[in-house]
Structure formats: C-alpha cells, structure tokens
Amino acid sequence: MVTGATWADLDRELDAWAGAGRAAPLWWRDDDAVAATPALDRLQRVSGAAIAPVCLAVIPAGLEAGLAAALATHVTVVPHGFAHRNHAALGAKKAEFGPDRAIATMANEIAAGWRTVHERFGARARPVFVPPWNRLDDRLLPSLRAAGFSGLSARGPRALPRVTGITVRDVSVDIIDWRVTRGFRGAAAVLGEIVGGLAARRAGGVDADQGALGILTHHLVHDDAAWDFLATLGRHLERSGTARWHDVDAVFAGAG
Ligand SMILES: [Zn+2]
Figure (cartoon, rainbow, N blue to C red):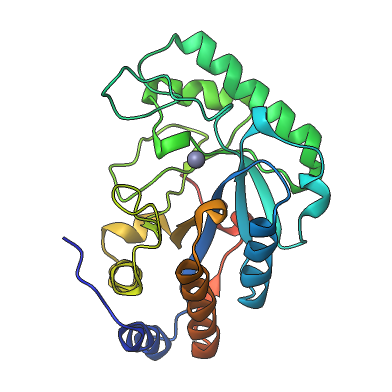
C-alpha cells in the first residue's frame, strides 16, 4: 500500500537531496505513440517547459507518416513491442511477448520493430526495448541482444533479470489508474510514489540499483488533471534546483 504525499512532502524530499549535496535523479518515459497528435504536442510542450527529456516508446507496426517530423529536439525514440497486440490466453494478463508464442516468432518481431524504428527515426532512435504491458518472457533476453538492443525498460520495482549486454532501467511511477478510471491517479498517490522512490534512492535502498526514478506517462489518455500534475511537477523540480531529469542515454549509460 503506497502512502500518499503532498507537494510540500516533495519539496522536503528535494531539500534533503540538496542538504546531502546531491541531485535527485529522474527520467521520463511516455508510451504508445504512433502518430503526430494534439496530445503529443501537449506532451512536448509540458516536458519542454519542465526542461525534461522524454523517452518516447513508439509502436513500430502502427507508425504513421509525420510522427518523426513532429518530434521536438528533447525527444528520443525507442520501440514499444511490435504491434502492441495481446497474445495472452483469455483471462491471462495481457502480453505481446509473453509465454504464449514461439520464441522464434517473437524474436523476429522484436528485430523487425527495431529495424523499423531505426529507419524511421535515425539518430533519434535508441536500442532500448519497451515491452507492451511491461511484460517480457525472460527467455527473450538473448533475442534482444541478437536484435541489437542494449537496454530494456519495463515496470519496476522488481527483481531485475540479469543478462550480459542488456541494461535494465524500469519505470516505477505510473500516473494512470488503468484498473478503475483509466484516468489520472491523483496527485497524492503519484507524489507518494515519487517521494518514496526518491527517498529510497537517497538512502541507497533497493531502488538505488535502478538509478534515476522513472516516471511513466501515456499522452494519448491524459486528462487535464494529468497534464496539470506534470506541469506542476516540472515547476517544483526546477524550483528546487536539486532535481535532474536524465535523458535516455544517461539512464542507460550504467552497466546493467
Ligand atoms: Zn503500451
């Protein structure tokens, strides 16, 4: 059970980082992009105002022309699965790359997805795999390497799979309530996770292994409350002078 927190709690946590002479590390991943949309523009405006680089996870098989040209300079692109199609058995948790299909079939899709993203986005593309629904059969880890990936990002905190050559950097704060409202979870709940995640890193706890605290957003489903929260978060972090948004290169620079 996550305890809620307030903006004042966040400011206090940031003060503690400042007092320790350290910068509070965060990073921002946004999933499910396929096209240039007003919501994508808003994501870029809000993150730009927060001076926060965004790692945009795009669905390779669904990409529409025009997305690449619409991206701001602070956005990098990674593949989000292949077609974001659920192949799990009825009643099982949704997964595109779960235990339900042949490894060779999934490995081919993973490789095709990276080729597409690399072709479409060029220097903006990064070889970091983001599995849809944040689920990946561990047996696919060697396939990621073979396809040219050096990074994996799902949802944490969790026991991290260890595989040579793949750096795992999960996101741990999802601002959307997928189970009930499919809208913003509310500032108290999200701040509780942000403050808790930063405090754990400051203390050198379990989460410290994961480096920067990953925030997960989905621009296509954000309501005004979600956008307002992100804008306010950006202001609090910037005002503190002690928070640092890391870009995807910095996040994945460490050895896994
Ligand atoms: Zn997704």
